[in-house]
Amino acid sequence: MKALQIDFAPGSLVRTLARTSALTWSAASIGLLACVLAAFNADMLMAQHAHSRTALQQVHALQQRRMAPVPASQRAALPAAQVDAINGTIARLNLPWRDVFDAIESATPPAIALLALEPDARRHLLKVTAEAKNSEAMIGYLDALQQQPLFAGVVLLRHETSEQDPNKPLRFQFEAQWQAFGP
Image (tube, rainbow, N blue to C red; front, side, top):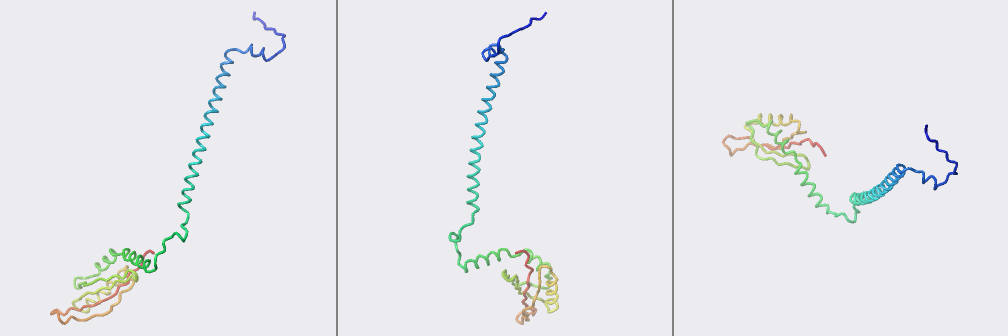
């Protein structure tokens, strides 16, 4: 038969502590140690989070300073003549030379000799001096240029026959307005 435990003594803290087994004490100790370690880890994570938040605020403040507009008093004011010169240079650099040359080259027959090409980037205009064997070749060439999609218009400015040359070529000058694509 099994021994019965009969205890009629009133319960107290001392009695409860005395009756607690070693296994319970070791489990409580491990739980208490786990709580202390968790609190220490949480404290480290909160300190790391505060440090990260401070660094993020510094980066955000630096970004705001960099993106802030420069006051008008700090901007370097350029003279109007210099601004015009810069814009003119940019326009000349942005001249669609490859497209213009391709259009001129594809429309130029062997009977035409190109003597000079003078671009005006600001007005999107190309002034060309050329020679032809006769007036029919000149008119055919101007019509062929007019058919090029790059050119908005081709206008004959002047023409004359070169009497000094034994072949008497027809020297002419025309302007070709090219399409402005983009800004």
